[in-house]
Image 1: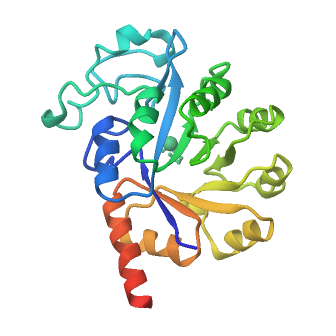
Image 2: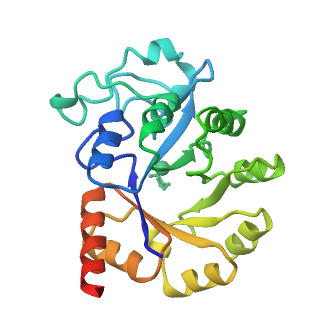
Amino acid sequence: MSTIIYAHRGASKLAPENTMPAFELAYKHGADGIETDVQLTKDNIPILIHDEQLNRTTNGNGFVKDITYDELKQLDAGSWKSYHYKDTKIPTLDDLLAWNQDKQIKLNIELKNNIISYQGLEDIVCQKLGEYNMAEQTVISSFNHDSITRINDKKINIDYALLTGRRNKALIPYSKKIKAKGIHISYRLLSNRLVALANDNKLYVAVYTVNSSIAINKAIHLGCHALFTDIPKLAIDIKKRRFAERN
Ligand code: G3P
Ligand code: MG
């Protein structure tokens, strides 16, 4: 099994995170998949942005939940990163799914509903994945474990995983109980022991966010199912080199 390389918010070291240029660059650099964060506008449009507020990554202010999609479309989500990306828009989930139709790379849709609960977010995202016939290559994750539990309760046919940055003894039994496919953990929690324990319980381990050669090599060496990196080119190159050395 080879570790899946997800571009974290796209190729976000070089391009503005969670934008189409960042996704394009990740694809160009050979990433196996894209991780992105989804939230809802005031009029319930699923859009791709990490923060609950607009100020860090756009020229707007206030909360995503308080702005309509028409208002959001006016914002510049690229200039904060570089003038080169001036007037880049915040993409919708539809934009990403439509773009991926002819590429079919893997997706990790992170429901960003751990601070604001966004009623109905699970249904909206799952419906979109169905519309674009893209459930099969997608895994849904969230730090909000109640949200992931709701997906299990609805018996929707989609893979999902629990996200955590905290040590938690109940994580593995709970993941098993709600039939998660895996656990997405912070790099600082990664250990041989945890990977073995998860795998013994038929759960995969994916690790975020690994941007150094040492961390990427460790994740691959420990047999992580996937890793999330802002620099997919680095991880892909490391994976290729390891493969070449083995053969
Ligand atoms: O899904 C992995 C990772 O993205 C979780 O943390 O804050 O970067 O969304 P964050
Ligand atoms: Mg994320």
